[in-house]
Image 1 (tube, rainbow over the protein chains, first blue to last red):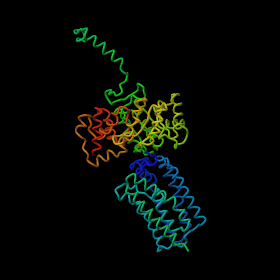
Image 2 (image 1 turned 135 degrees about the horizontal axis):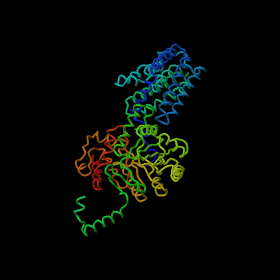
Image 3 (image 1 turned 135 degrees about the vertical axis):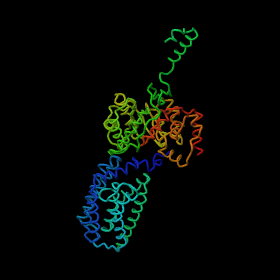
Length: 223
Length: 315
């Protein structure tokens, strides 16, 4: 038997669904009511992006990516999965990238219009990450503390950021800014699939829609 | 006492007693498959030591991080394991926080004498084999591992040499290698033939019997203990049986004392002469009790084992 072809996805997920959802719940318990601040920051970022204050809008999510890197990945997720530390560093890298882009103004879309289809997709994805994702756990019968919130949990942080960069950026910068959020959503989606959670399908759908929006924006912005 | 006084032993009885005593002294001091009143035990690695036939795995199930609720829940599982006569617990640095969770449970429960602690060295965890063993001892809060295995044969030459040194120094009790999912059996066979190892851990269950061809006979020939991992094929066997609403056949109870599917599947494994123990993993006390029951009652004969395999294949 070929050693590599014999590996299956579940061989790389070293925890059970119970443990993973308890981890999300513990994040909620530990940091409440910080959720209110992070959601406000997310809403403000979306508003600033649509009011053409894109550099400031690019800067605001950066500390939240750093916070998720430390509080979620380094301090908790890495206890369960030895690869968690590496993902934490990737989240730190995303925070630095957002700061760098905010400071330099590199490839900013300074006048995004909500009627522009890729921007509309970005708005829909950002709103999904900010509003719908936190409601999914409570609406499906889970405790409120299991609600996944932008700036506290990794998935809504990545989803909302995908939407925001689709609004704020263009060209190569847009593609670079989506690498880490998209890769995390892929990993998270595969994890949820192994754990038997319906959330996997939703994350894959968001990822596909976001990538369609990015391709659309890239093609549309070519001279 | 009155019986002894009144009943004089005849010459025929004396000869029978002497003969029986002589025969008993010629038997191995520990039978290969003994039921010492509780869990069935098997001798291992050519020694007179024995292990309970049902052990415990920790892959996925014991990786709960620092969650206080889940730490206490897993401690209850360990408690049930020892209460039912459990011995070998197997973990790895690859299993996230599982070694720390074992340490927590042992701190809460104390370390019973029956514990046979089995760990692994695994290259991606970083550090030398010696460093990994030292760190894992701290995590388990134990002073000694009874067995340390090279996980999935990663850098097996270097690690095995280091483990042999540690065994010679008395730092660890026994050495072994592991594989799973039927991977690299050729290499495993080569190591079993050429190296002085005490244990091999491999996947063996009623639907994955590749090890019967070469590895299990070789283990018997070389006096190597065998730990069977994935006894339920990662939970798939039980899940499929439940999905099919499959009924436990009546003969399974009559011939092997099986009352649950856990009994059926585990008894099939541990009744193979080469298998020392199986290591099912669970998060639930009730399932742990079911697992442990499999080690306590009647074991299937060779004919019954074949019937069991045929029955599963027919489903």
